[in-house]
Length: 181
Image (cartoon, rainbow, N blue to C red; front, side, top):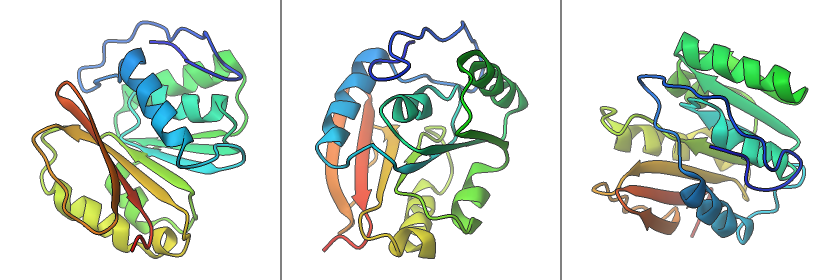
């Protein structure tokens, strides 16, 4: 696992064997970011990474020019791991929070340009979580905001906000746009 592009390009993440993490592979991450780059300019955006795990995806956004990153995870080991990486890279614009990812995403008052969620594939009520994000005032009020959901390939989201679906093996990404018509 490494940072693919930008300021932290080439950084190799320390080995981590968290029982509840499923780090996105470099090949899938590179494909995802190439796709997202056509949809949004990473320079200066504020990113929310929920169910952040190792922080691998969030750091890629920072490396590519995001102004600020919030990584939220409830698992203490994941949070400590991300804080160690933050220290190693001397990153000042990265907030690592030990909180329930769903509660934070739904009840925060901060406006984000992009939210990335990689919940457990067996998360109950995942469709309801997605619908709640799409209805959240902070998401709806930013007409250019994107919500990127990593999920098992068997799930399908039929919503007018879906602007893109990508599949890589058994991993899929669905991209939602705020106020998409």
